[in-house]
Image (cartoon, rainbow, N blue to C red; front, side, top):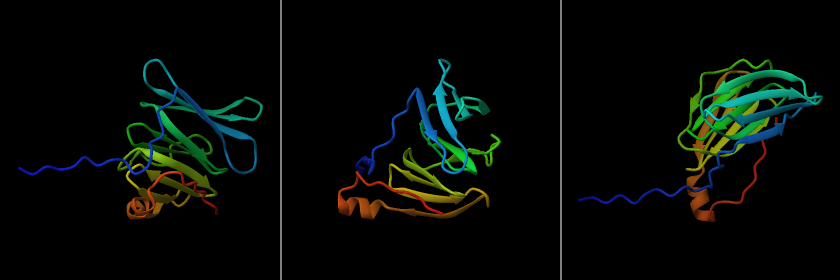
Length: 155
């Protein structure tokens, strides 16, 4: 009989929330919001600083993080899916399935970075529609005790 120890997350997962909003980086006064509905779906809305709806879409699960720049918006969900939207609200890619839930989601210029609870780190060039790199921070997090680090992506 082989016993396998359960894998504990290296970073805390962002909890699913009923409502989350973040100002998008760059020119203009845009905000990206995600609001969970009673039916379990989440309405993703981009609004101008004056409260005018720029675009709206829906995803079938609860959001845990939003991020964006002047070029795109992104929503990470509790089922490990990541959705990326153009400035006009079109989905840039099909949903991206991550290895585990998002612990950190950051955007800068044309880049999006997701760090997951298992220590995975992935960076996408959203405008180029490609993943730039993916690697694991697990050994660093285990050595340093994990948790508490802040990260920012700059273009």
